[in-house]
Length: 341
Ligand SMILES: Nc1ncnc2c1ncn2[C@@H]1O[C@H](COP(=O)(O)OP(=O)(O)OP(=O)(O)O)[C@@H](O)[C@H]1O
Ligand SMILES: [Mg+2]
Image (cartoon, rainbow, N blue to C red; front, side, top):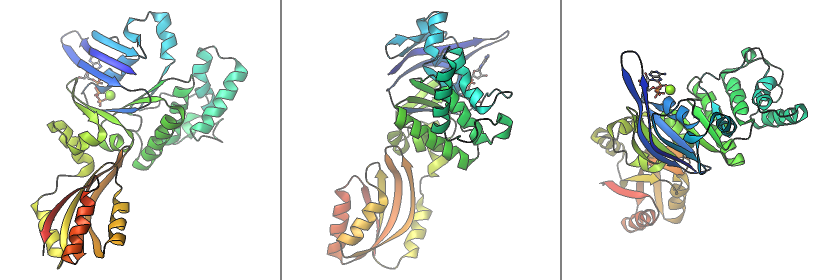
């Protein structure tokens, strides 16, 4: 578990002081993927760099598994840092070294013997999906492959925590998805805690369990991804949720749906975790003598299940339709009848 208490960082420059991180308090559970989202300048990078003390805090504490990082002397810090791998937006690879040599670098620094290094490097190459690229140089790799090297290198010393600062921001959407899947895979296989920083809400939606939203150095909102997505409180959070969900549906959408149907009812189903939409729809259609048509939907998959809304048309005998609706109500799905012919 990582505890962050009253963490602050003020940068003093010649003519001004900047409060980059302002009194952050957070608990991050072992084995979770914790996302931090915020716009440029919110203090995300400073925050993640305070965790492994690449930046020294002005105030506050970082406690990792009971050990106070902020109190360690230089030698102890060097050892403890090996337990925290870091992945960067622009990969930060050594350009004159091959893939294998890049991954071996932190092992050399840690004083691991050559045979042991070789064994570990080949395990890592396989884990991140770079088999066949061992002797390539970074300049011969795609962006996604470079980041795989960055991730393998960060995992070399078997860290407990992986810190990712915009690890997918330099990648195209497809490559981003592949790298995000790799991070989930690593989280599940190795049980490693991942702290991930991003300005893209779909990254949070796809792989995080919990999320904190930063603005002006402060955490302004936090919670499980499903809670924050389904009930965002702060204006900044609402904007981030709109990035993936679009604007909340307005009258016009509903009006136009009504015009497309000539019979039956229109239901709005809201999914927050647990029940999968396709499974529910097919169960309703199979169990009750009703016709179900999907009119419009916007459902996203999160680590804790689906989230979003689905508009369906349901046609049938009044009594049977009511039974079907009662059945949907008995699940975790929220139902609203928005039109009845
Ligand atoms: N070394 C530094 N010296 C002075 N000010 C700094 C330093 N590093 C960061 N800052 C300032 O601290 C604030 C937070 O910066 P930070 O890099 O942590 O933001 P960020 O959320 O990571 O932004 P981005 O999304 O652009 O990477 C900014 O106002 C920045 O100018
Ligand atoms: Mg940054």
